[in-house]
Image 1 (cartoon, helix red, strand yellow):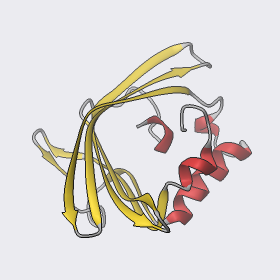
Image 2 (image 1 turned 120 degrees about the vertical axis):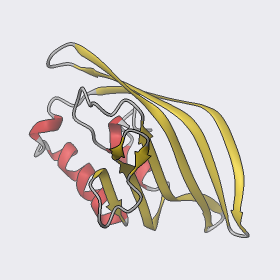
Image 3 (image 1 turned 90 degrees about the vertical axis):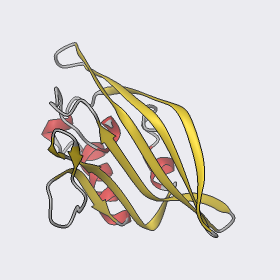
Length: 147
């Protein structure tokens, strides 16, 4: 949905109390573990911050997103596990390739993602999404649509 800029449909996949987190590497082999006290590449708690990010890119008020990059997200090696009676986790390898129409440059971010899914009104919704970017010397602007 992100690749096709179907923003509202993508947003509808998340629970109202969702978390979206892209932690930083605090050491060569250790990720940040607390978005409340450590720097994150992205941290959004709840629908409102995600709605705000979508509003900024669709309104043209985000100079860092103009022109908006074209993206291709590729997920593979999905592993589904039970977290509790009402939640499951889906972990996968993740690659996002993005094309910058301004510079004609191509950037690739890769790593893995973990989604905690919870049933809401008969459908699975994302309660928490964590994306770990392994090549964290970032070649481009990072936002929710590019990880």
